[in-house]
Amino acid sequence: MVFLAASLSVVILSGYFGLNQSTIESFVSKNQSSTALIYTLLFIGLTSFSFSVSVITGVGVLFFPSFKIIIYAMMGIMGSSIIDFYISRKLGRNYIKNYLEKRGGKLEKFEETVEKNPFKTTFILSAIFFVPPTIPNFLGGIMKINLKNYAIATFLGNILNTIFTIYLIEGFLYPNPYKISISIAGLIFVTSVSLYFYKGEIKDILKISFPWSFRKIK
Image (cartoon, rainbow, N blue to C red):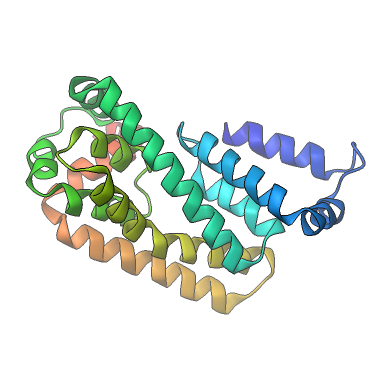
């Protein structure tokens, strides 16, 4: 899907359809409300089914100012996380457990950990930069946590990484070494602190985040 999105972006922005970044930016500036709505709905729809949050956020950075893309991205993240939450509830505990174990094999302590403190688990996994969003989202649906607490934990876990990711992308698109350095340091710090609180479960987190790489290393 990432390859498809990249290919479509190249085709559209190459000018074959009379479109380029400047014409799209002009359209966005004249139709801010409708384009913001379309972007947010696309964000929710695509990321609900494992499409990269960073890719969709990067597209938004091209056309919206920082403070707006932070709002739109968080709306998209929250929307997709709630959809995944209910999908998980519908599919059931055994299905989600099998899904996770297919990604990374038998999970030794993870089930015990997620039941111990569901709010903390959702918050921490959402705050670890390299963990796919569908992992805490699907886990949230099978844990003993209500939607309100799940939504709060998801928001708090994602907000800093979203801000740092947007600034990082901006730093590369509009060369700014300071933004790049601060953003990378921020992402590393947030992830490191989160991993510290789950240091006993780092192996399981890596297994479900990088299943193929882990198997090769093994």
